[in-house]
Every structure is written in C-alpha cells, then in structure tokens.
Length: 125
Image (cartoon, rainbow, N blue to C red; front, top):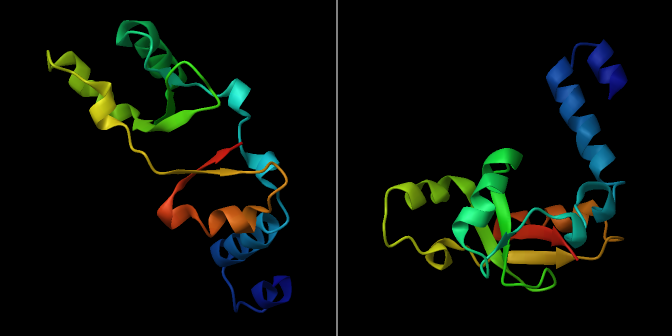
C-alpha cells in the first residue's frame, strides 16, 4: 500500500483508511470496549434528577440503561432524547430506550463485532 501511495495511486487519506482497516482486524473487543463495571449508565430505579448531571458531565451520545443491575442492560438511550425531560411533564424514559444491543466476549475479534454493527450496538460483556 505504501508503494501504491509513493507511486500516487493512493492519496494520503485512502492510505490512512486502508491501514486503519487492517489494524482493526488485529484488535479484540477488549481493546475497544468499556467493561460493564466502568460504564456510565442510566439506572431506571433512580429519578432522572439523580443521573441527568452525569449525562451532561460525561457528554456521551449514548448510555446503557439498566434497572438496578449492571448485568442486565435493558437497552440504549440517546442523550439528545433527554432534552424532552425539560419540556414534557409526562416524561417517561422507558419509552425512549432502544432495545437493540449485542454483547461480545472481551476476546472476540473486532472484525466479528464490526460485522454486527448495522443491526446492533455492541456492548462488552
């Protein structure tokens, strides 16, 4: 690939992208994912006022949703959907939880995980 770049057959962006793809195939889920014990989660057993500051502080776009037990992830909540909390008196987080997710072993090859991305969000189990 470097030879193709040197001969102007690949530009720098294409070379960088192709090298990145090859590097991902060597990674394991453990190299990219956050262990459950370290996840920033939304716990439905707590009122929104208790976890909304964490949502703002961490600035993540997605949060795993649990109900008291980190081993039982119910789904994923997009942070932007929480804006409704400030404008809707009947705010119900449960109606916004997206149920599609996938657990992978820490030793799983990332190529295996990436092949599942179009149909599921990946969480490390």
